[in-house]
Image (cartoon, rainbow, N blue to C red; front, side, top):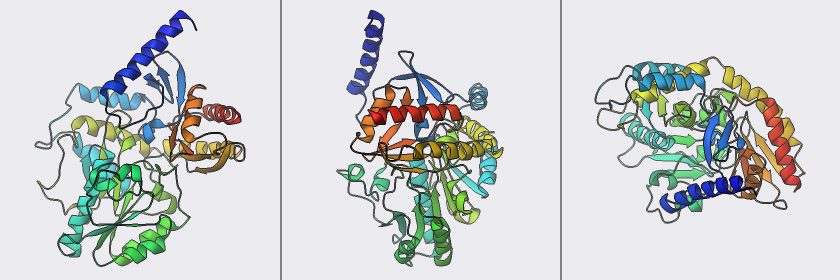
Length: 408
């Protein structure tokens, strides 16, 4: 090792050590320190480049520093960034109108993070149940699915079945009924007169890109309509182009009563989330009952509007679909060669690693050495979610690096 490389390693070690000492250990990051990003690539403090196949859990669908999104943010930064909702601002209305049109709905309730969108959706569903459906006070129930990931607030982890998410964080909020994912019949059986909503991910991301059987979403939609409950689709990771459609629900022609959106809605620049529904649902919320100081701020609205404008062209959805088909062909070649299974929809894949070659974490760490960034989940699975601006040749190169790593 040269003196220069040793000094760079020392700098990187100091940065990591500072995080370890002063940042709460609620994450276990991979050992890389990123300093810059452009498109599908990032550069660490040593100047080494990596192909980013995580996209900040789909928050970077349009890549790092997309020029159109940066331009919208920079223009707004020089004008106005925050008013709170105590006043109107000139960016929120256009953003809400464009997002509502994209979703085919009437109203938008803007928030910041995905977890806030889920919490907001829960409140809206309960208010709708009491004020419209006529459920008895404090009796509302929401049906959720095993293996779900909707965030990490105390309400949400209360209906998770991940022990790591739940342990030592109780007592938990009642009112949730969890059923197996992928079987619409168990949802029908779980619905009672007190049920106000079914809350599901059209594709379960954190669980390892788990894709339900064909027809599942249609059957859930039919069940919710017939039983008089709301269908809430958590499209925070799956939505906004990731799966080759604007929304994962579009794959089966399903329109939920409520969309929960986030991550890519902020263009990889800042947190932006939203609950989108028709007036007969979102109209149950009255002034003073819900809000956020930063929700709907002018900067977020300007960025969100640009994201919606980019999605309206269909370019990114088409790229995700075509490149996903290309990636699937390449990944399937690895099955039986260190990979036991592949699940892929658009540019979103879960790859199950043969325990004989290592854990998901170990494979992710080895890939760092070959210039590829992925993330493990649930022990033996790694996830791939490249920015939608990635090239086919870059995907081919990344799969080849995975092949080399698996071969030892």
